[in-house]
Length: 78
Image (spheres, rainbow, N blue to C red):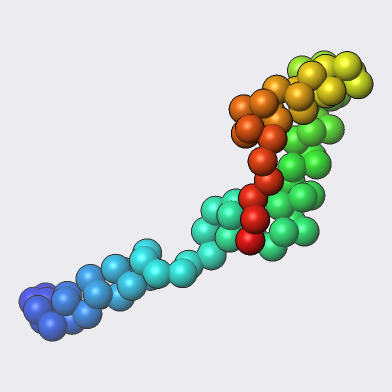
């Protein structure tokens, strides 16, 4: 069976259009609620396996201090 070159071109254009543009793919394109659900599952799994790190209040305080020093203590102004 011979293929029509126009049909082939149309199929290629259709394939190209389905893979480009604003297609809902990936974590960033998901609904924020669904993103939180997935992240929560990952956090729970990490804690269950003992692989997650919990900051002590002292560690959190030190991290905040270091972050303030790096940024120069300046906040962004809109």
